[in-house]
Amino acid sequence: MAALKRRTPSSGYIIMGIQARPVISTLKIFICIAVIGSVTYGFSDRPPAGRTGAPNESNCTVCHIGTLNAGPGKVEIEGIPSAYTAGQEFTLTVRVSHPDRSRWGFQITALDSQNRPAGTMSAIDTTQTAVVNGTGNLQGRTYVEHRSAGTFPGQRNGASWQVRWTAPSTDVGRVTFYAAGNAANANNESSGDSIYTTSEMMPSNGAPMIIQPVYKKGKIILQANGSDISDGAVLVVSGGSLSEPQTFAMAMNSAGTKWQVKKKTKSTPGDLIVDNVLPAGGTVTLVVRNPSGMESPPVNLSRP
Ligand code: HEC
Picture 1: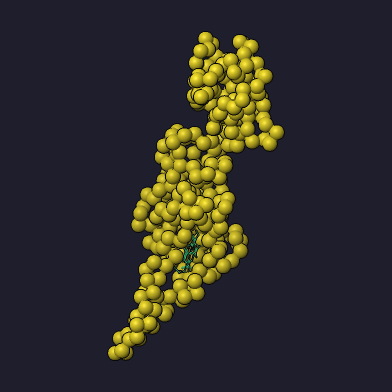
Picture 2: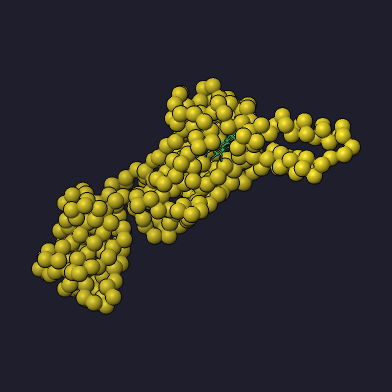
């Protein structure tokens, strides 16, 4: 990293050195290529993936020395929707601001409430921004970040970039967006900059969502995190062999992570248990209704 940091002055000197000397050693040519290479592909153009500060990630301070989220700056994410349909596209704006800075950068990603990738991030302006992909334990996470041409050297107070978020192909509940921003001092080095991070969950629109419904040993189980299912919500089961919809009370599991219709819970009006409404080989339609009256979109559940 130290070699990269000093690249601006040293590249100039080495090029002058070539012109002045008739004989150049192989080693010097190698150094020259390495240094000029870092001018073109330095980290102000596309830093590595996985630096938004999201769960299991670091942030830009691994290279940009300094205290995270200190001083009068901030990074914000605007345009986060409160609901989405499968594959729906949204334009989000990432804004980094600081009263005393003059160069800017960012990185953003989207995760579900289990910290898995949620949908995909893609670049709108491919000159100013680029996509990078997570690797290793961050496999599947997609990021958009600044490129060198999108750092706005000399621009005061702040900068913003637009990115596209494509919603996942199934409803994964409320998604959280994580972003890191660099309010930099434009010295072409990783020193003296201010790094900020933020995370923002989709606002609730009040409607519950059915996430990962499963039938298991006489129970119907739904993921609770990010689902906006409130205490007192009921599960309405229809379709299959049912002549009329059946309503079940739901209970939270002891870990507070899943909503379930228990094995012995009976429905109204039919006085049926889960195994009656969803026999082996059957398919039913589920809707969750919160006490507010708001209902989830319907989701089918099959039992093998
Ligand atoms: C692997 C180390 C590394 C990481 C991680 C990294 N950077 Fe950098 N960054 C550098 C280095 C080295 C420079 C200076 C050389 C250059 O400009 O390429 C730099 C320069 C910059 C600059 C220009 C700074 C100035 O004052 O001129 C910006 C803006 C920037 N990085 C943004 C970011 C952001 C935003 C992140 C986090 C999402 C990040 N960087 C993560 C190493 C890194």
